[in-house]
Image (cartoon, rainbow, N blue to C red; front, side, top):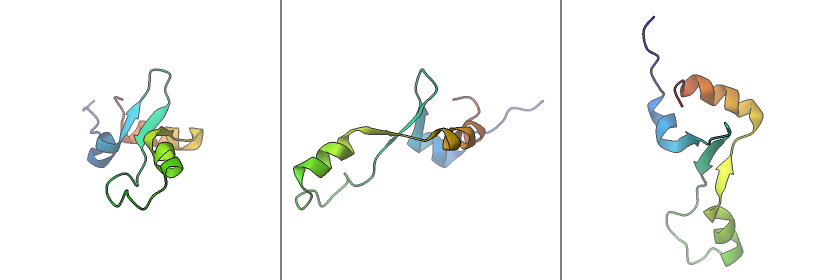
Length: 65
């Protein structure tokens, strides 16, 4: 059986936690930060976690994660 390839775009953007959750960095922190209020920037600092329905898809894209 050959090895499965990981999806190149997914492995750059998502990572698995120890408990099996899939985390990602939220968008909106790259530039134009002056006009965004502090509460919004504070929310964007936190990691995002995918819902359980999308975790199954990510396991196919990242088989060895």
